[in-house]
Image (cartoon, rainbow, N blue to C red; front, side):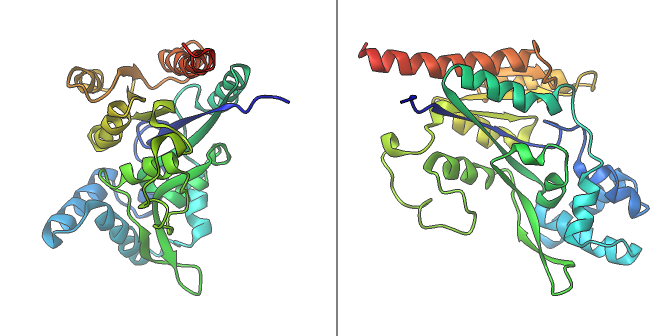
Length: 278
């Protein structure tokens, strides 16, 4: 009988991590006849004026501006907007290659999204099928299928909840029983030591730090050629928030590719050591 493979989870932010820019800026914001800078400035002003969460503010603004501009905002419309999102080099080939590498080392790799972006847009992308779960902000829909209220807002602090869900195997966002139940570390579905979090900025720091402090790994990525991006990512390393700063390139032989394969090797080696009783 074949041995059960060791679990290994890679959790990703989305905007600026797997795809350049913010997902709303590809087709949605232009459809509102707004510049991205105008949309985000208005969202920030709204949040400040109402003392609101900035994620809830941008989601409310999406509905308000879409209604004013007569832009349809059914679930299928958001899926369509997500279909135009482009990715950093190597992303679309990344999953099959890393999964195969894990399998060769008797490690079962799973991929998760943990993002403040819009769930429905991520679900419309070409890579949506690669993820075990997509944890991101999302809307409720009325009887006509039109977005009318936020269902879930994922901000920089609530992101960590989803790491614990993965850790304990409590993957349904509406189920709070298992996530709040004490489970001994040895009985958890995916130990933090077998996790990696990849993000690009300050909103990802709580997740980066949690995984790192629990014995896993975190990677800060940055956009090649973007002013100050490399220095910002390197500061996260210098401040002890993350292990590695790397350009957002997922091609074979890239820094991220090499790092993740090394982490998979580590999980495989730890199993061999444990079984040898060393």
